[in-house]
Image 1 (cartoon, one colour):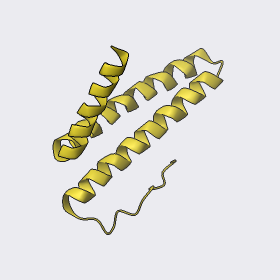
Image 2 (image 1 turned 30 degrees about the vertical axis):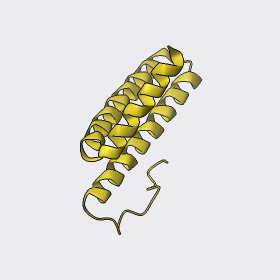
Image 3 (image 1 turned 135 degrees about the horizontal axis):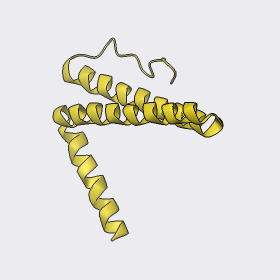
Image 4 (image 1 turned 180 degrees about the horizontal axis):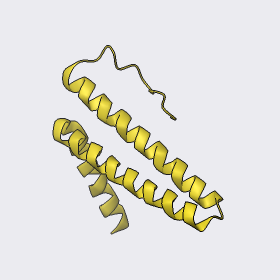
Length: 93
């Protein structure tokens, strides 16, 4: 993603806008996690690797924050996430 909005948000309003802002935030954080973890895998500098992986962990916290807010305002998302968890649990039982 690298600082580009994946969709236009200007025409959205209210909860629809809020949901898309949170989803865009999640996308950005996941993109950052991937970038930092890939760079950490590439470097041989142990100090850089340590910091990159620490920053990636912080981004994972941000994903959790955005996801928590999204689940508070999007009942369908909450229901489907619970359904997904149920399906995985059943498949792996």
